[in-house]
Image (tube, rainbow, N blue to C red):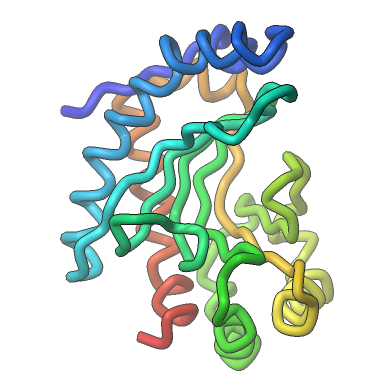
Length: 208
């Protein structure tokens, strides 16, 4: 069984001052967990979608001054990158774990993806109210699906379609304290269940 146990210390990495110091802690404490998750879930997505998926662990290589405020492992059916494609992610901010599917502004076909989601917006009715939505992958903030269902969800998808910088993220957030209280088995089960719930949304996004 794949073992990934979050600790409060993992989240406190994002409070460390200095790029080198924070990167050192990320590399030693968090990235090994992302590699473990990457190995497990790339196989999971390959099996469940029938298309080979690859894991991409954040390197933060372009940073020269500002230390990263979050980190992640992303999953997409392309070996050389993921940002141009709809992709799944597991990651950390200082406040929470996120387990999501995302379309970010680099995706060249996001207009078509947004249109598919707008045309089949009832797909979101299958998700529980504790899911979250967001229009900005650079921000830790999100809105519960319960709040977003009537109006905000539609607005986010229209913005994804019509605005060059528009983005769309949907999934679950787990507060740091709650994540630290989960056993490895409980976290893996929650992540797998979340992705299982998101697969129908992903299939609409890609037109499957």
